[in-house]
Image 1 (cartoon, rainbow, N blue to C red):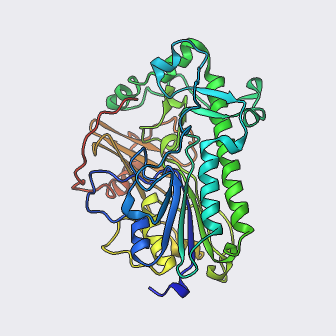
Image 2: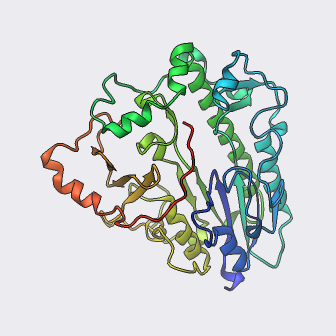
Length: 389
């Protein structure tokens, strides 16, 4: 790799999960480090506690541990809801009388900005900033709650019969959830949604601080910026809170890629891509953009043609797996197909809340067969762990 032709790379990550299921995998930052890049970062990248030391030249708070103090809750926190915290662990929220600069995510951003200001001059760089919020618990400075008064908070769309057309295993899973029932019992749905909105607002402000520093630096015109989240979040849809489902509320994530002007094709303009893509696509995409060898054939497909304006119809699908390879979701051209051990679901592009399961409608048999063809015949083995919804 010739570093003189390799753009800098800065990623905002909210979760790149390295598991025991892939013990021989070469992580993305390790691939770039092996390719001559200086790799550094801060915050939640490898998902909870254990960092991957081989991936980094520098990391905050350390190459072994990725959460600075205060990431979860401030010292001496009291939820004010009696035994709420003891019963529901991290599922809580609070307005903090705290300046941004004292928050853990600000520490992560400040560290990455410091790295940006003191980079080695002989290597291109790969910087990562993992922002913990809006992961629960939803703690944020008070000013981020103020734009969302409780009497103006809108609860997500719901329907009383929303579970009636689901396979039994899906309903059984939903019935395990504790958080929706707890909010029904306490009447705190609006407080919960307010806490989520405030945490998103706070995260957005932290991203803005980081991007302002990049734009003010000498690297603004030679840096690829990628922003994404590791999953979505139910806020009461299908009488469920949190993640662990295959519906769009849990699986649809933000994904924004900004190329420097020197890398944009002549016809490519900023805009929204309507194609179905997966986070697996980022590995080959970034390697191709930066001229780094991706190694063995990676999962996923490069997004470079889409970034350069390719509008070829169809041909792409995003596959999501849940329940330890017993359930799959396939998304393509706005359609969502879900296969479970005891039934199927199909949702149309004009059903954004996924209220109406069309899987039993014979006119969609051909579409279901096509979407089903994307599901692997022999799924990779995974280690089963106890989930606590």
